[in-house]
Image (cartoon, rainbow, N blue to C red):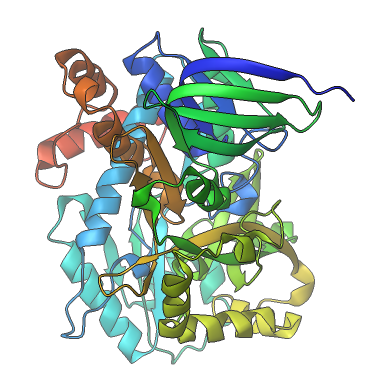
Amino acid sequence: MTTTTLQTETDVVLIGAGIMSATLGLLLKELNPNIKVEIYERLDMAAAESSDAWNNAGTGHSAFCELNYTPQLPNGEIETKKAVKIAESFEVSKQFWAYLVEKNLISNPENFIKSIPHMSFVWGEENVDFLKKRYDALQQYSLFKGMEYSEDREVIQSWMPLVMEGRNPKSLIAATSMKIGTDVNFGELTRNIFNYLKTLDGVNMHFHHEVRSLKKGSNGGWELKIKDLEKSDKTKVKTRFVFIGAGGGSLPLLEKAGIPEGDGFGGFPVSGQWLKCVNEEIIAKHNAKVYGKASVGAPPMSVPHIDSRMIDGKKALLFGPYAGFSTKFLKNGSYLDLPLSIKTNNLIPMLSAGFHNLPLTKYLIDQVRQSPEDRLQALKEYLPDAKMEDWVLETAGQRVQVIKKGENGGGVLEFGTEVVTAGDGSLAVLLGASPGASTAVSIMLDLIQRCFTEHEKTTEWQDKLKAMIPSYGISLNENEALLKQVREHSAQVLKLDTL
């Protein structure tokens, strides 16, 4: 077969067709309609990895119910900083999505976002004490007004009847509920955005294309070599800016880019599985996202939750995720991903992070060794009457937890998302996992500030950003009136419940 080498010049290259690339691409086209964008995806469709509905929790992460975002400090106090930041970020996402719907750039918001209460549920004296402290700590913030707390069994029964069926009447329990939680199908949203982007001049999408190399060009931009996996053709692309939003595939590309800012970064892959309910009667009884406390040493993506979901227009009920270990960085990746990612500049941080996170290693080994009976027992903590015949095991997504060099040269395991940018702003790489997709808009706005600094400061871009996100540059938590206004507007446009 003859190989053809093509040449392309563009302003922006987006690697990976997930929610991050979709969000950045659309933001940039709204800010500058003349900008030229090329999008490259290794698979045959958009949002087939981390953004796919079956590969993530679908929770509109707003810290209403996720207990790992509010850790208890050694002095007994509850740390709320991360929860406030995530809650504000999700409000920003909703504002942007509402803008897209209002401008008819995407349609039918009910297909990608729905209201569903976000709840936390715990048992045992120590955990009940924690949840009450958490509730009290969050009440000082406008973002969490409207949250309810209860230890009353009848109240909790009304919130989550399925969870209370068969539960020991003498057990000490507590729960919180936030009415304005959401379920988000990020796969549907991502594909909607890309379907619109493809209609615009200067935007081209390429599926079955894999980035093989990227290096800094003589003019300050980047030169990429890309292979068409179907035709075996190769393309040489010159661009002023590259964004790598390829999920677990981002780390190997960061290493190929060779920027000093990426020195010492490594990754630890964590896989996941769900139990999916196949009994329609049970599915119909539950209508909430109920999050519990994670096991000691568990990564954030493994916080147990029993979730009502809407996937492909049908109600589903999932429990999990159960964590596992695979050396793949992507669900459709290679078992060589982890070993090939270990380089001389990240070997010490990787070994150090492994040594200092032995509980995580033990947790993952225990999870991999779980039998169906073990999984059922974990489910029974949330649904005491659960029977194995009502559930089937489904494979969830693959995540790569970030390892980066600490101050002492050792490794630090980072939970969350990390954006690595070249010093000149010509390249940005997104690493990490939760809360990821829910905060995509805030993450991309921060990236624009760092990589398109001169443009972002202009009156033209500032005006456009405020048109898309009315709260741009303003703390919603410190402006209760504005928070109320944007929440109500987003809810009206996106057809969501209000307080």
